[in-house]
Image 1: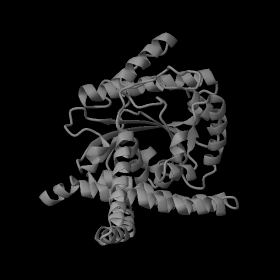
Image 2: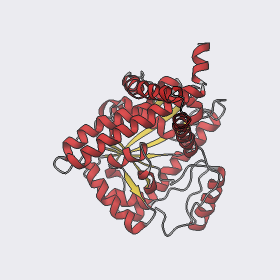
Image 3: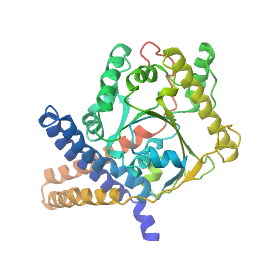
Image 4: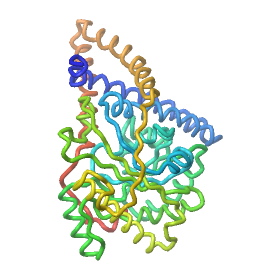
Length: 386
């Protein structure tokens, strides 16, 4: 165990993980590119079938990091009927809180267990589609990229949801209705905005932005049967904080994952009433969070009906995929770098150092993207907000 702990905290090991992740992503991007332009125009069905496995092969690195490398796990709160009858067997629209750096990673672990990881889709900033590996993968996976220009974004939402609803296998579409990750400063700005607009004041969530949800809803009806209300929480007293760097260091975390399935038919069809419905949902989410932070129990004081607890065995597929890509990438990469360093040429040596430094920068940039920013522009750009 001592040796394993040393390995997990080694910068060299983290660099090897980064090299494997980004290089395998580029290889997968290449095949996605060929299929997108060579197969998709003729058969979207077969393109999506094949792309599911390409996406899974790439996304599974992250599941391996969470479940196997760090040893993290989650407790699912749901009903037995919902778990057995619906998860992994239908299209779903996910409304998730956004309080942590790694909440989306826990969501991916849930999707992996129920066979939906390769078909995880999300709303994302348009600029992310130009980021190699992860951004390109999302682009070829037909994620919904928005530019915070409402005239353009509502057309994109309409077109993309119709496309995603036609997927041959179960697909999940994630929306962070808060629009940005929770911080104390953003909460203050959100509460100020809520007071000005006469909206409910929340303590543990930002006021949800309703435009994207309402615009999506009309195109979901009859195609995406359910909304999953998802609340992911970590014990604030846990000395290991839910950050990406702690996962890379191999430190285990325990997440509490509440999921309530809501048939789309239960959401009002009127746009204003649908927006009010979303605000009420976030009031319930706030009560769940308050109950958990004060008592350690989601249901003790929230007034929300108590759900069953579930834990699941880790799947081995992420391990197989990660080992496969580690061999495919690291063996030739190591051989190439060793030859550069032993060549005796200053230019070759510099190229080798440059390659390693590039992957180090990519790793640090990725960690930086996930870190919580304290500044906030919440509600200051209402014209373009979603």
